[in-house]
Length: 157
Length: 271
Image (cartoon, rainbow over all chains, first blue to last red; front, side):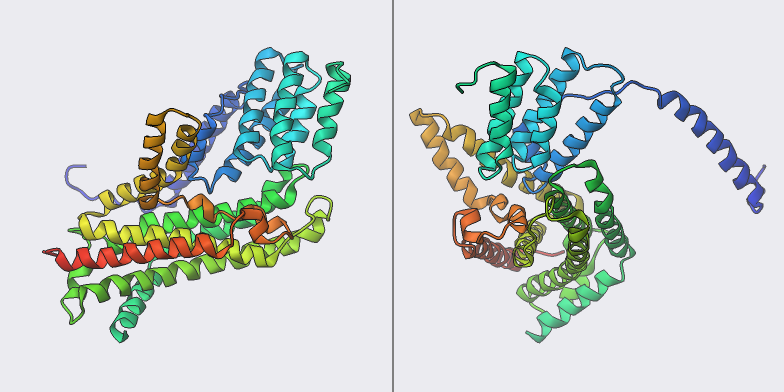
């Protein structure tokens, strides 16, 4: 070691290092892969608009949609108030940032509408955003009307 | 004109020799292919999702090219003395600005053309597979117009780099200022919208100031035609103004930026 060159010529060292690293990685990954699903609140719409330089709004919305879908799919029990609240916030953000994405309205209707008065009203707010952006989509007023009729018991609206 | 073409040619060939540019191109192409898997997460609006994804990749790749390659190629830096060797030849500062801009624009357009060709091929291939219920309309004309509008956004950023490089030394500050410019451009309409909702006299005065600032920092979202790709309606109906209007506005802006860069370069001491 005292000034002598120390060339690494044998590939055995590299192979041993790769095996050691793989073992550590798999051990570590087993611990991290069992974490419960987590969804942090979405940033405000206007901030996302600036961060995405406007041109990326659509992709940001679609990423939020995937995040919400993965979170909802990962819940192993009926969603509670906290789970629904965080998803409500995400759906509202999506419907404002990229109101033309139809999937947001189908998903918010299926996730939120049958979970009580607060969430059915949230679902209707989201659907109204969709109706102003997509006036030719007949399914959106149908969902909204159905929510008023069936869940809120106000058929007149 | 010959000297401008020659300089553009050198800049273009110099860009082709950079492995980083080819690497970026390769990664962008791979990401575009991943659009096929991306739509698997969605259930209804599949045409919109894949089209948005492709244009977002083109925008991101173009911005990365501009911020990480074009800045290095243009900026005056102690490590990058390209400008010295070029200006040592009988070439004017104006020719330098126009030649470098033309070369980098050509490189960017070739790069983006490759991405657009793959994006269009992928969309045309996947449309019949998805079916008309989930992907009813794809307008090739609107796709081309949207792509041209995206190129104009990117070229304007390139022009801004040229202008900032004329005034400031160092690649990193130029990159930061360009990024800040881009954020201001996207943030200003948001501020104007929130100020516009207030009815006080002071808010109206502020709105006038913001309107003036909007002339310096244009709203590039007016060139975002992504939604039109999935519609057979005329472009004019979709955006509310004749399509030439946002194009000519930003082209005029780019021309002013380039002329301004020529003026600043002529007055700067390069050494």
